[in-house]
Length: 576
Image (cartoon, rainbow, N blue to C red; front, side, top):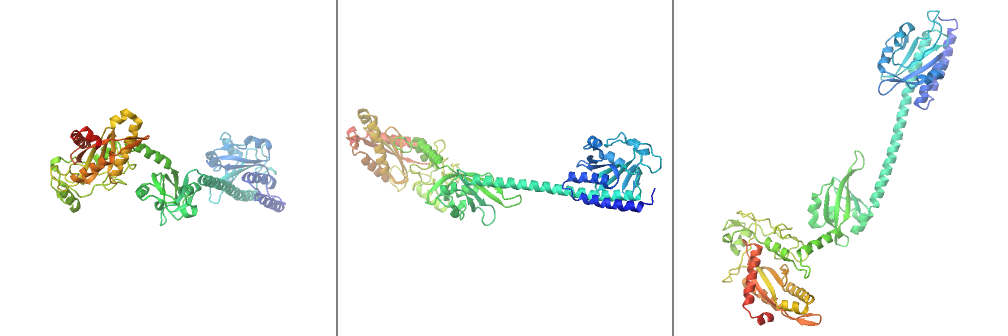
């Protein structure tokens, strides 16, 4: 019921509404804003109790703020009502424009639902518009997009009456402004959380970058960052001190190069086959002084940012000492420990690498083999010579490795670096066949001569003067034999006082002359511990030929040596 003082009430309410709405914009957090909303209702809109039910992310509504009764506040703050129960309430009772009023005559059915509520006592209303203790008035708050933000609940108007048109409009206006304030407070809170999260991420990124920088710069082994893709792919962008020391170049100079500019020419294929992600390789990199160092490379791909350019991070480990040990072990396995000459297994591997399983009857002459090799035509016997024999890395002129280089295994004569492919006995085995000169006439054929050497008189020296003197004699004989052959020829020790010389490209007369020269090199006196001792040498000349095994070739040369030894008297053998 309107009174004569209604205009004054409107003006006072408007002033209070203006004041409490202004207070909404001063709150610094979402919690402060929610509490300001309910306090403004109690202070400025004339209700004794007010509550804000805020929509949670799961859709249910929680009592987020309460004002007017500390006991009721302690009872229901933080309690949750389901979304379904609230939607039911917002469709019941009377719709007062943007408000929802549920009179006590209908609200009794809500006493058992899960929406948090308080109960107030009071007399039954005497007038039609008088407020009943079980009346309920809700002011829904909506965001700009239309989604429900929460619901304001009010109770017990101070004048004891249901709000009139002006009171309803004031509450509706206040709910609209409260929705804006809550949305802004949420936005500020989200922005603050985002800023805090961003700052933490930036701090973590700075810490990560600093950790990476220190790990990169102070790593005990070499580290490098290179470009990926584009015209400058592989160019070094950054190197640490360890890599600079390893290669003997300052960082400013290394930035002009890529690993392909520094790698040993023989290892460029290994580098190109190494994948960028998780790739590993062992190769040689060039130092400033022109030498090369063995290193192990390990690659990984790193990104500068989420969508930024990718870079290649390479870890470079110095393995020079390990490689040296591996070479030493390989040398020990394939060389005689006393003389340093290739041992029996190495000799058989080198000899077997020159032989194939081609049958003796199908052998072509040396001239035919050479013609086939240069002209690419098929020779009689179904074999051709399209390619010259493959040479191992560092091999000498005649296809044998110099002492102290690459090693082969005796179990497979074709399993060594650069060896020819194992023959298939097919019509085209791409192998220059080894042939033997004729035994009865020197027709100019050149072959692989196998000179089997057995020392004469060595046993008596060993028995008379001891193993120390015998070892010294063997070392000197090995030196004289090595000095007397060409680069690329092989001098090997089979064991005891037996030596074998492999000399390629010799005719029958050449091989005989070589045997004489080597015998003459051996017979001069050898001085050991102040005394002179002499040994003689018997040589047997065999010829390697495809279709024979290495053992067959050595057996043939050994038999010829014993024939030559028996053909001379003992005195003549000692005299050479």
